[in-house]
Structure formats: C-alpha cells, structure tokens
Length: 289
Image (tube, rainbow, N blue to C red; front, side, top):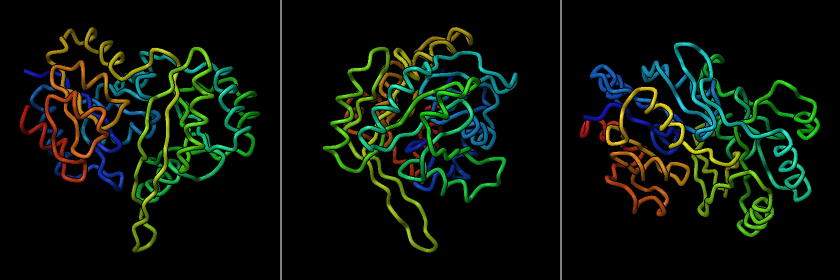
C-alpha cells in the first residue's frame, strides 16, 4: 500500500490556467482521508505553495524550490533547507546582466524580478484570479544586484533563467556551467503556458533553466520525509512532468509521468497518465490509491 504521494504543480496538478480543478481537489482529499499523505513537491516559493496546499487539504508538509526546503505546515516552519549562497546569486546575476538575459531570484518568501516577463508574467496573471492572501508574491526591483547584495535576511531557494531565443539561451547556459558549487537544470525544450487577456488566450513560450546549490533535488527532500515518516521508497508515488521531477519519478515505488511531458522522462515512468488538462493526477490517485 502506498503511504506518500509527492505531486508537482505546474504542468502536473495545475491545469494550463494554473488552477486545481474541483474534481482533483475532491480526489486528493479522499486520498488523504484514507491515510495516504499527499504532498506538493514544487519549484515555487513557500507562500505560493501554501495556498494550494490548503485548497487540496494537504496539512502536513510540502517541498519548495525543487527540494531546497521542506515546510512543516502545522508547525509553520522550515524543517530542512539547502539554500543558494548569496555570493553565488550575485555571480549569476552579474553574468545575466552582462548578457542582457532575463532572470528571477526565488527567495523563501517571494520572487524577485526586474520586470513582468515569461514565468513571472504567468504568475502575475494567475494572481489576478486570486484574493490577495493567496497570491504568489512578486517583487519588481530596479537594481537586483544591489538589492541582493544589501539584503541580510533573504534566503535564496533558486534562480530561473529565461529567453525565447535558443541560441542566446544555450550560450548563457554554457557560461553558467562554469560556476562551481551550483546545479544548472538541463532543460532543452520550450516551456509553454497559456494566459487570458480579456476574452483571448495568449500563449507564452520560452526556454528556461533553474539553478540551485549542488545536491538539491525533490527526491532528496522526499528521502528526508521518508525517514521522518518511517516509510520505504516502495510506498511512495511521485507524479511530475519535467526534468526537475526526473529523480523522484525514477526512484519512487511508482513513478508517474503526465501525458505530453518532456520526452526525457517518459522512458523512466512506471505509468503515464493523462495530461494536466485532463486531470491526470486525479486519475492516478483513483487508480492506485
């Protein structure tokens, strides 16, 4: 019997509009009532995940920043963390600024950005559909290098690098890989998100990568929870759609991939469910839990 289900958000639990359907919420709550822990394992910051965890009735833990931290919901505190050192963040910012490429800095509380583009634009549009207390916090900063340099209390989960030109994107990736002590996520396909502008649907497409300190992964965070909960990996289901979900899908007792996921992870799945727009998470839980 499975005892823990780790579910990614974007492209997995959330549909193309960034929402959890009512049916998916119902199925997740039913699964939790059976004694199976359903936790979110996402690249998003704390507050963005908190509101979704509350919506689905997940009340114990969640993983943020692609495994950079585990949050204990009941104690309202971080119980595990692997943050990016400030000096590494500054080094990456400098390279991005010198090459005029879009980047964001994810802290434990907010997303720092120089403007509303790519993934941040998607989060902003998502926020318009939510009450203020449930929104993903976005802070627009004119001089991000100086802001990070002078801030003492911020804890840095990860950075994202985005561009819609593949040649430019690949060039910056090569430069970032020369920095020691960080992990640069190997993403080669375009991210595709849909936002609504009035009555029209607008597609945002861009190449992106995510940067964390070395040895950060959703699976390592799950392993910490497995020890805490005294369960084995055979009792774990992992559901995702992208390369930052690869290790947890590969290692879990049941690794589930969404239909339409990046080809790199399709081959490692034990099961391929329907897409995020066809409630693949709900169908997986109904089938296996």
